[in-house]
Image (cartoon, rainbow, N blue to C red; front, side, top):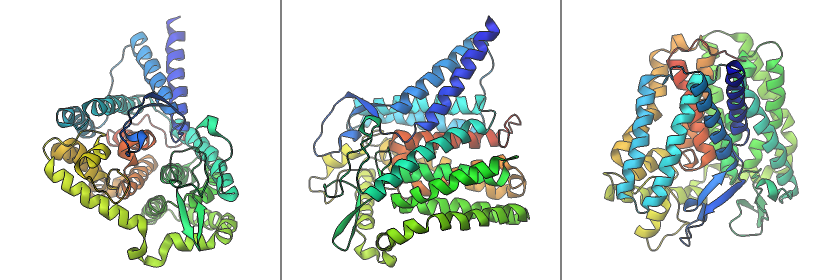
Length: 445
């Protein structure tokens, strides 16, 4: 009976972990407490319960039950990574003392605690990359089909019960690209915003690239096939940060393979790139003017999103200087912007630069912990690159973390939104497992 319970709890936890990954980008949620602060976007201040919250909660509950039935030591992974994450979590709680909305900050601080346990679960229980790769591939495929359908129809697909936005490019507030007097709808999928969808698809593609390079038997073929379906959907999000993120991660892999002289892997990667561009030709031809507008030919002065981000950075810096000790409160920066700046040229939102927003919300000490988490992986790899290029698992973890780091330079959803947070803590967990030398982890299932 005891053995049955152990297997049941462990298997249930892993299944809900897979479901957590599958449901990461889903906008579907319950509004637990409506807290309007017009004109601040309601998602910044409301208490929300997402589909991935439920899946993650069941994961941790079943894991806790398995630990009760079969007591065992809980490892923290790499001690330095664990220390920084624990301190960042504490800094989030401390920021409540100076928060402009203490209740909201405590709500986000509780979420940080849950994410800390999510990290521990990954370090202790994910003994096969397949538990991450397969649900991530399903996540990407699900979102890709919806995103492609939305882009070609230039409207939502009637999937509101699954959390899809009601999309109409003519409605103000919808994310569009203006081209020749028309409003071109960016693909949302079932996510809250095209940038969030783009980031999630990019991170799925990075995992698939790892499987293409290092998978066993038929895994590279499976991963490559899924990659070529998801890649056009990523293009249709028109998320430039996601595009750059994928380019940086793929370039990192190419350099590592070249340094290791794994020429067969390089040929495989180049072939995948050519095939992915080939299947995307209809997308390019159909929306060529839109791509041209998005790239903007380097004309930053007329790029409204870039100007908006520069304005938010300036406002965020000013606010940080005034609240540098313990911050304006974890998750409270949009409301802090409203309270501080009466005349604001853009919608109230955090600056699109995660190292700044972490310091703005949790103070200089919390921001310092985040900054160490941000820069340490690159320093670690540079110091021991000869060792890590021989480990497929290490290269996969570093590639995922570097891709997220690029996103963090241009957006804030890995800090503030549930999907981005899950990806970020997942990457930290895999990275920590690599550093701790966990030999039980398999490279591809």
